[in-house]
Image (tube, rainbow, N blue to C red):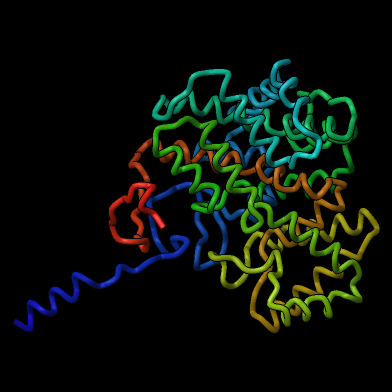
Length: 387
């Protein structure tokens, strides 16, 4: 009797809810991992700091998409293909020209990517070679979409992409009509490498959910862009710079931060669900910020950074994430704040594509359960009898 009562009690036990899927392992991946023993984010086994020191972004894009770093011949072929795909069609340019000038660039890039998906009929589960071609086309065209929208919203003429420049050089050229010094281009290129991939983050998981339905790469990319827009994910780099502008002066930084503590306000750019002892990407990007500070002759943002970092780490044991140095770095490069997350898209399309391939290779529809907390089943009363 006692055993039966215990059994019934267990049957009625509430299931454990993992809010935000925290701690839940939903699948396997060979694309990237944070190695606990070194606290390093790795792409296909390579630490990102090593990749940033030894490669340009296009090499890393090849690695993420293909699984290995390219040799000279493979890299030249990849570069030639990517550069040949940078131009947009007249119809695509017309669509971008019709976007409202007040629209957020994340909304315009999402829509521009969606338009690309209308130019062919695509479904998930097609041969990998075909989806790889689409991924390289997205990699090549997204910077052109972003730069074109950036120019047009300013009332300026668009600048066509060039095929003799790296992706980073070409993006500066399409946005500003000129290429800054090597130090600036290198800092931007490193930021793309650091943002290129990060396992099952919110936007990547959103893309994999869409891929699991056997939808196409363009749809998965659009869903991922929508997830990346949020300030708790990709939009955090924009929020960091807006926060720093509110601080405004290094002399105000400590008081501003302590008031934030007092009011229990969210301090953007700190903390990470994966990294507990510091984001391994931060030292590399902070060095870039130092280089940009020296180049621009403007120390204000780095000073604010260091004051806030010291207090957060020493008093709260909370470390900065990649968004904290990248926000002021992009600001010193001359990019408007609302362009930071679209730049993130330029980089992360590589990771999203690799995860799309992986999901398609060994697919299972992603469909979690939920614990219902609403009303029990009830009868519908006719309108005349409802109070």
